[in-house]
Amino acid sequence: MVPSTVKALRYTGDREPVVDHVPTPTASDGHTLIRPTSVGICGSDIHLLSGGFGGRINPPVTLGHECAGIIVDDSHPTLEPGTPVFVNPLLPCGQCASCRRHLPNACLTLGLLGIDANGGMAELLAAPTTQLHELPADANMTTASVIEPLAVALHMTSRIPAHPGDTIAIVGGGPIGAIIAMVLSHRGHHQVTVIEAHPDRRATLETIGIASVGLNVAPEYENTCDIVFEATGIPAGLNTALDIAAPAGRILLSGFGYDNAPTALSHSVKKELTLIGSRVYSDTDIRAAIELFSDPKFPIGTIVTTVVTFDDLNHNSFTDIVSRPASLKTIMTPGGSP
Image 1 (cartoon, rainbow, N blue to C red):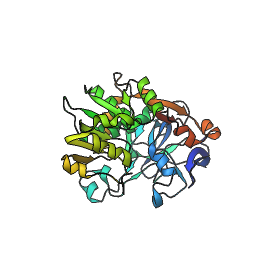
Image 2: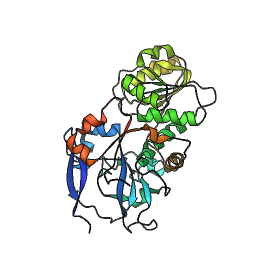
Image 3: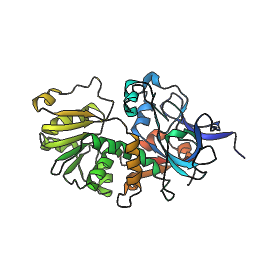
Image 4: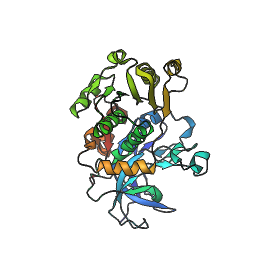
């Protein structure tokens, strides 16, 4: 018997989300019912809770845009119940100039599950059927939500392809910065420096085999880096990237926190830098991320340092859990064990 309500982690307009009971979703109008088994917590969630998305949010809304789960009924036209899937959370309009050019990731009004519509931090989710990607039957469904940030990193590295001998820096050792480092290492690029301000975060990176340096040594890299991935999304990170980029260097920008930032953009003229933006991913990136996630030689699961459940969130502050400096990637398992 299907319960009338399910648990969900809801943003209600306050800085702290709440565990609540919501009506059980139904799979109608092109949706498929899944049981989320892995939902990643992202910096975007913290940005949302701090009011960073402004009037775009219409609370209450269930959080969670990094999601993988298992189909629970026959609502999918081709996939059987019990099939593991990854949920592409992007909600492009399909009509703007970007969408017409087959660039839905650059949609002018792009929405996401977990922000603009209910996301995966619930015991059940009605996900858009067209946004589901089948996963291998033996996929680790406790960590499968890392496919989403992995797709982000793959898109970023495709925007600025690295060449043999390039000196590469990553500003910011959070989950995205760490995954970029792992991707580059997997491809044979070993001249990579991760610059991370917090010593506890650097210690965590060290435990998973990623070498990093403190922000205080960044001046030593001034004008030396052929490629810089700016993975903090904040003005300080952008300034560091502009400083350490070598003449004719390339900088990848990936955040939305640069508006009105006091930055020395004149560096990009003096050093003839190339600044390139990157936004989420394409279906091609997702397929590549699923393949890489399934490769035993690519231990992406090592970035998961914390796993929480609804019980944990009933007794601990969500903000405190996800803001621990030593933590790298926190995952919620709202539907119980796979």
